[in-house]
Length: 460
Ligand code: SER
Image (cartoon, rainbow, N blue to C red; front, side, top):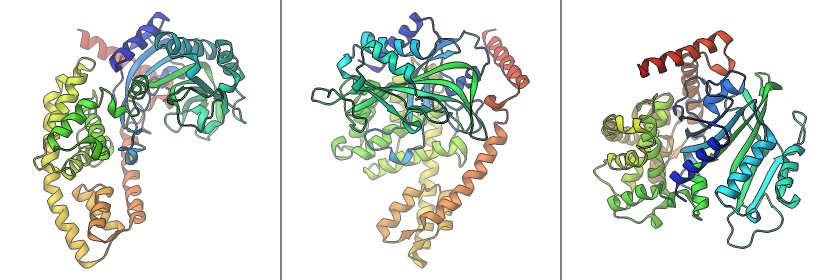
C-alpha cells in the first residue's frame, strides 16, 4: 500500500466513525514556547485536551506535519528521520480506552488487513502516579489478543507526554507488528526488534504541573499516533523508510547526480534525502523560517549545510539542491498546495544558503588552518567561533580535525553551545509568550477570536 492510500484509508475510516477531519497545523508551533517544531499530532490540539471546546466537535482526526530533531545525529541509520507525517485521531472528553482500542483494532485488522497472528500490544504497568491499566488489557483480550501477546511496561515505555515540560499526558497502549521472516512466536518478547511499534493510543487524563505532579484533567481524552513513513515501510515489507516511494525518487536523483550507488553510500544519501525533505517543509511552512543562527532558522541552516557537505563528500562540485527540492515539492504539492505557492521562495532561499555556505566555508577553512597551525587542539571557544561565525556544525569541525590529526575540546564546546542555546531559548520564550496550555481563559478566548477573524477575512 502506498502512503497516499494509507492516509486516505485512515481519514475515511475515522470520518465513518464520526470524526471531523482537520487540516495539518503549521510545522512551526503557534503557541508552544518550549519547542521549535510540532513534534506530534496532539501538539496543536493541547488547548482542546485541557478543556477548550473544539469548533468541529469532540472527535477529530488529521495528518499532521511533524519534526523531531532530538536524534538529529542519528539520521543516516535505517530508522531515524526528522520530518514525518503523523496520522492521529482524538477524543476530547468523548470516547475513552475501550472505544479507542476497538477502533485501532478494527482499522489494523479490517482495513489494513493485518492478521491477528502478527499483532502484540503493551499496556501501562502502574506506579505511584497512575494505576495498572487492566481496562486496556481486558479490551485487547476481548478482541482476541492472547495473554502472551500483552506486555505490561513502565513509564519509560507506556506513558506519553507532555509534549513540552508541562501539560496533558497519560498512560498509553502500543501496538506492535511482527516483521520477522519466520512465523511469529506465540509469546511477545518486547526485546525482540522484529516486533515493531506501529501505533500508539495515549489515554490523556493527567496534567503534568510545573512541580512535576500528575493531576487529573477535567476530561478524559484519547490521543493516537501512527507515523506515515514508518507504517508505509512496514506494510510494504521494506526494511527501511528510504526504500519506500517517499524517499526513493530523491535517492535515485542523488545517485544520478553523484554517479554513485546507494548501496555503497547509504548513510550520506539518507542524510541528504532526509535533510532536503525537512528543509523544504520548513521553508514551505505556513509559519516558515529562513536560514539563520537561532531557533528554527538554525536547524534549517544545519539541515541545508549538512546536506551540502554530504553532496560534496560524494564528489559533487556544483551544488544545486533545487533539484531535490523540486522533486519533493512535486511529490507533496497536491496535499500541501502552499509548497507550490512558495516554490520560488523555497528554491531562492536554498540557493542563497548554498552561496553563503560556500563563502563562509572557504573563510572558515582558512580560520581552521590558522587555529591548527598554532595548536594541536581546537579549544571549545574556537570550535564555537567556527560554529557561530562560519556556520560549521560541530560534526564538521570534528571531521576536519580528524583529517588533520588534531583534537577538538568537545565538552568545552558543549558548554559554549549550551549558553548559546539558553540565550536562544530565552529569546524564543519572549517571542512566544502566551503559550496556550498555560494561558489564562481570557488569552485563550482572544486567541480563538483571532483565529475566527483570520478565517473569516480569508474567506471574504
Ligand atoms: N502523542 C503520541 C505520539 O506521538 C500519540 O500520538 O506517539
